[in-house]
Length: 271
Image 1 (spheres, one colour):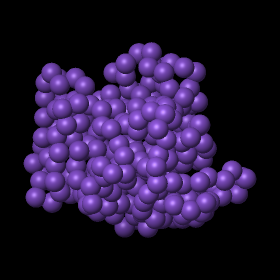
Image 2 (tube, one colour; image 1 turned 120 degrees about the vertical axis):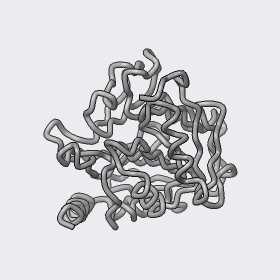
Image 3 (cartoon, one colour; image 1 turned 30 degrees about the horizontal axis):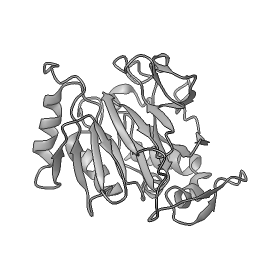
């Protein structure tokens, strides 16, 4: 209860600028983001950009390439297995563990967006990178990390809204749940060792109710099968033959489904 109370206080005090963001992220109307004179027109339900394809590509662990319709590229939590030399416009880092912050692996002189400071406190991010809006909200890692900070990132690109939970170690506070209420794709850690156990993670998924959940933060394919066996019966599970998933509003399920992407290094042994 004390830990839950602390998280509620932290989110309530630090999320005060996000009262408007909760209505801005993935909102179908014209909005003004955080009063900084940047108007954002959301096109939810309309046609997205046709200059390229929306997709996410998983590099393993918690690292993804998020690719917008107009070819904006953002890499999340680059680890030591991210393909060296991949170019991106921005990199987001949810926490400073070495499996999440290998920013040197990303080429193209990207904007580095670190969600926490060296003192393990929240570093607010609210910016646009070309056609993608990126914000973050404060979070905590698991108890085994001594309450070290974590940052949940939210990415809006055209008509789609994605969220990356990083190394979340708690259920969502009411404030966090409000900010994430319109998420379409939720990238959720499933290792159940340094993050939430399966049951609590399912409670977080129920709090957000996203159409798509993509398991992440695991290093052996067998871990995804353990998670799949746990959630089957509650949510449909789809296994994809690739580590890349094309996205559009039309392909979103009507209710939550788990999309397991093929591990980019499938020959890893169970550890």
